[in-house]
Image (cartoon, rainbow, N blue to C red; front, side):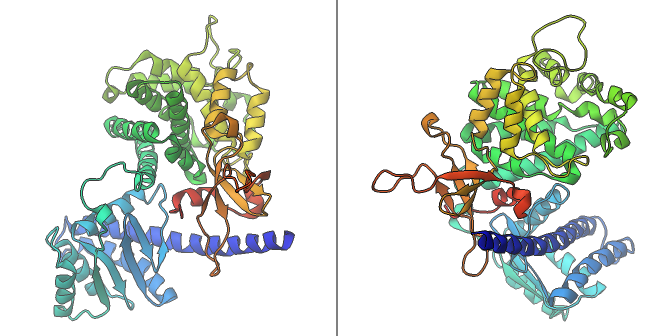
Length: 496
């Protein structure tokens, strides 16, 4: 058993190192393409201002071609593959991914193969031929290749977009694509929160309407199936903690609000409040926010002012429209603690607001399960729940905490568990039956004969012909010890 687990750890390390390398190269490449296509729509092909962007893109592309022999970008459904490896979204690259997918799909271009190192003229001609194609024309790939030959370019081949029947027609929240919708809403919301906070910090106009639209999409997803978005909270972006954390807290809060029976309107207000719960930190210097050591008294005193600073910012955000008092109080309250011993200090005693109590639990859980600059190895979900339970009634509302545990599960979503079949699994979905709360659905962490990770979903409530459970949880494991990136399993397609 130990040797098998050791082999699995080594395989994970090897795969994740390769994935990380290609993902970084791919994200850089997609971002360069995004900028280049944008610029090509402003300047004509002979403009000298275009040269800098051509050279930057060439460097990224040719570096990859020299290392790998060629470069192939292919669109499959809503994914981009680089040399047959699916590129993962990141906060920084999501908008570039989305833009490239949109532009290629409009022109029904699905694949481009760069067979050798390119020069400036070749890349320039390629971009302007691409953007000159008529949208929606089925023969675009053929026309593209003909134009490339006319310009004596033999180093590039273009293939048509392969459209499945399910992709045709309206884009709806059907069961088949709801996971993809959730990914897009999640990453786009992180990017939008980042834009809003960055603009507020720079005293610029913040587009709150876009954030409100995304929160409404998140509400629709939560109402359809709360587990779709809850799985996204396992994605922890260390470099973008503030924005990633804000979205995760909103998802947990929406899950609790749904179980409390909130209407869509109230859920939207709760979602916005949770998204903005830490917005006051935009007024705190980065050297304090990112300090790896303990804060001194002066720094801690400033940090404790961020809920009040957040209230001031929200009251001045005109694009929010008429601000419901519940939202303002929820931001003010999220560090008060259930016995009012937290901060900011109150002049008179009162009960914490419901929004504040919900966000406080979601905030603490996500913060403790996420790597931080002063705590690189976070608590596991199981360890975190144990800590929260110790502080029920004093710090947290015990009723809401019980509801939260019901939401994330006794074995919380994203937990790594060892099964009595000697398999490892990642908890994907809680069991709605209270009698089987300890029998969630798990994604098995195993590999096929070619060494690729499988995405097989197993229900631990499943029994054999004799009524015995086929699989049982033996114990939880620390994914850091096995070098397993939990979030990656929620981004990939499963073998349902």
